[in-house]
Image (cartoon, rainbow, N blue to C red; front, side):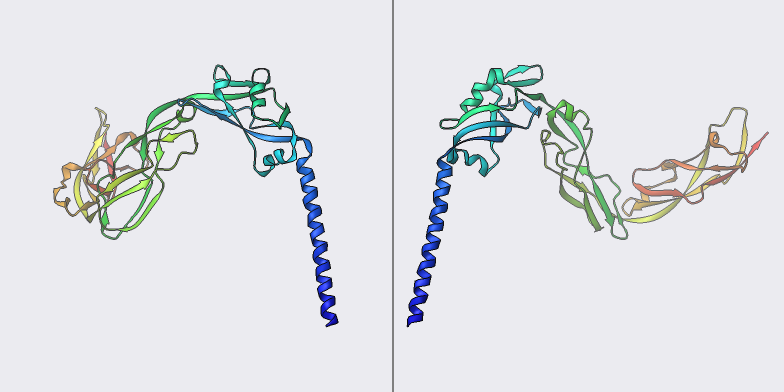
Length: 315
């Protein structure tokens, strides 16, 4: 019983001790909050009331140091989060492509942002320049960033189509002048065996001051079964001088190509042209290299089976 009484006594004594410590801490905090201080605080500078047809491209300083006087509890809010000073461009003088805040002309506006009992004592800057530029717009072509892997026996023989071949971009001329093409985000499709009708996101602008008129674009691609075919095509010699006679062999070559099953019957030798250019002649080996200079639009992966042509110049 005696031990129990002692235990209760010690517990109560400890609780009283903790109570007085907390009371002392509260008193100390209240004393600090009600005391008057002069503090140096960094404020971020944010321009506001920017005309809708203009953009702020830069400013001479991003933050300023101010000296404030006030009670602790009034100044405490500036330490809870990064404080910001908003400067209205409506109150500033415009000089060419800049709006200028100066201590001489605008200090009273800055003072008015700190109401009693906080007093602005001083600031670290005499002038702040805000560089501005007019918004402009132009159209820029779109490029589809697409990686395709077809299932065996399938391919596409027509170019893809986009719902929009270009988009409007808006921003200061110094930023948009060098933008000549805009790509979509990369899309990878594997084992394709049917037509594609999908949408893809346009790669976002790298600068917040450049705005795109669209975020996505739709595209279509026709996919077909194909067959590997071959056809005999005559060889044409070009750039023959008037006084030159030449004999060559073979005079007909085999052209290999890929074509959709739907179109394979429509391809004929006249759709191709195979040439040898005498301006590329190599007299050491008596060989000309033939190339395909014309082909139908509905074939792919075309090549000459043997592109070497032997020749003899007849004197």
